[in-house]
Length: 315
Image (cartoon, rainbow, N blue to C red; front, side, top):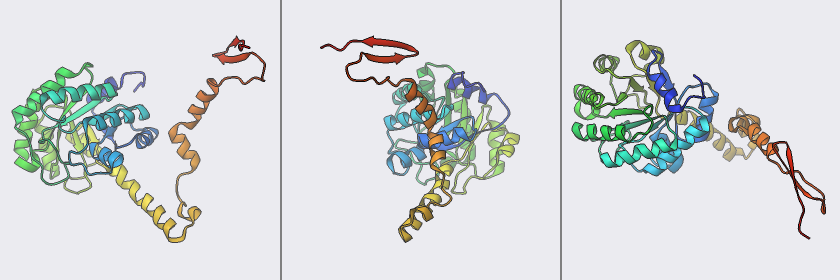
């Protein structure tokens, strides 16, 4: 997919193909750069991972609009990938949702997900969720659609009603959200493969499937989801969970014997770290824009794109 296209257009094109698109969920720009280097086509700016990585707190509705939108924008910019942003409940009523869409769109994301939980929300994997009435969510979705300035910006409606009202009620809600104009649908928390198949059979919109580390959602793979009829596979905070043992192992070995070299065996090299950050590109920019040095008393000279500008110091 040509990177010259707008991120929103690139993401919208993913909706139309049969192949499942995997969305690694991250909470920081550095992780997003790793996702891009490993060849993924899009990235998810996870609200859960953002709360953990930016603030060090659980995903319990404590992350603010400005914190989330800014971080999602940095993830999009750093990765160069279309970014799918978790915008929680839209941070309030329909008017709040309108501002939420404007802020995330300005940040440069390609897709925005809004859920039907009450505010403040809870992570989909945690207990204690409550949902708002379906008509209220429909109005929030209409506000989101009206607010977007780029028609290719994808609005995803999420329902958490499966854990609160049951599968059938969740699907009926999803059908209403599709009718309100949502571009894609996420029904959180199917308990079995047959429930996932029922979701795909009844909802006529591109669908997202999210595998969670709690084990409550069947860990269906991309090939299976493609066969069932889903378009996107996200996997919660797995990228972050995979990193935790490596960090803990290094710190525990270091604390035990104080030997940095021994503790860091198996770690990435400094060169790999710099490569992920694009260090060589920044060095080239540094050389391109560097001023030419001169001896005291000589005219000031600065080369700009191959030309030389000379000025005399005042004496």
